[in-house]
Image (cartoon, rainbow, N blue to C red; front, side):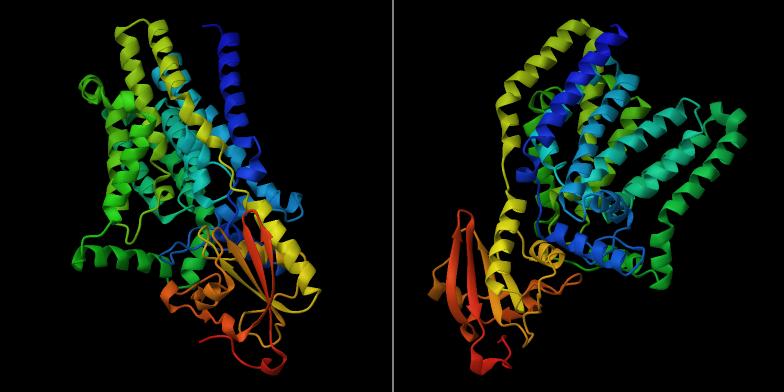
Length: 497
């Protein structure tokens, strides 16, 4: 196929990917407590003139690296601290991932497999959903593809890609502790690569470029390493403790591993139902290839690591293995192209996409997180009238009200902690199925103002609404804002029970 036709096809796919990701993005992007917490931490660091040494903590209180924060800062500053800057910036990486998977599959498997795999990646509902807005797992697939592409270039004796590999790997492992497995996989690949007999003549050259790649890797991790040195490698000790606890302490069978495997199988079956019918044929043809062995090890290692993770394993923990499905698909399509006419395979692939099209419209589900947050903030600031107030949230979407706190902080609102005697008003923001007033007073509403290191939910304090005087309620299509005032005779009473 002519270069002009190739450019037209990939341009069309990228245009589709851009449309699916940016169409009504402010209404579809996620902006909840995690995003608000991250922006609060970044803003606090910038105003204090400090460089963040760590990123957001996980549910196990293991700190990730600061690379995620560093990538947020430029678009945040360009948009005067408005969340839309990072939202648009991070979503654009989802489009770039489509280009990377095309280039990688084109080099490895040919044009037809590359086009079909890239098109599926561009319009996959789960992929689109997980590349909207800013969140540390959003960038993992992009850097995973960069690492794959670097390995491919190095295998083609372009050893100057070693520093880039170190850079990409150093950034990727900072997004979430589960991504650490990529480091060990790349390290294992390096030992295999350097000790191949056909590399003997280039071994010194490889070692030289590898050293430079290792230096770039360490430089990228330098802020995070400084934090670990300053804090006695607290995060490493937590990881070791979790692994020892997992292996040495008998725990009751829960949903940790099962929930993830169910999620992964659901993802695989939703996106690749026809592929599941041809797995045996596919692997009978290509299992002996080094590439597929490496991809299989990558996949199985990721599943094993995630099965060892304590607690509930959320789908975004597996963001470093989602791209593998599309690479395996491209490999399968290459096998078909070896035995059938390429045009027939292309038509089959496009037909496959067409029959899946109804599912792709689920991309256009709206969250209205930004709109909901800003509408509530307008009511709060209007009713407070620059007097000190406190805030609590009752929401199935987020246990934290940090996204509301962030906008209030930007407005310079006199937000106080819930137990502050200075707070004259209490605003309770309720989202979805808001109860009646009497029912509301009997609810145990948790105070989430404990960022960035909250204790377990059962250990957090409970807001006692009975010690506040109800004023009025402002209704919205998404919920309501309840307005309370502190009684004049109880200005110094505590609001917890």
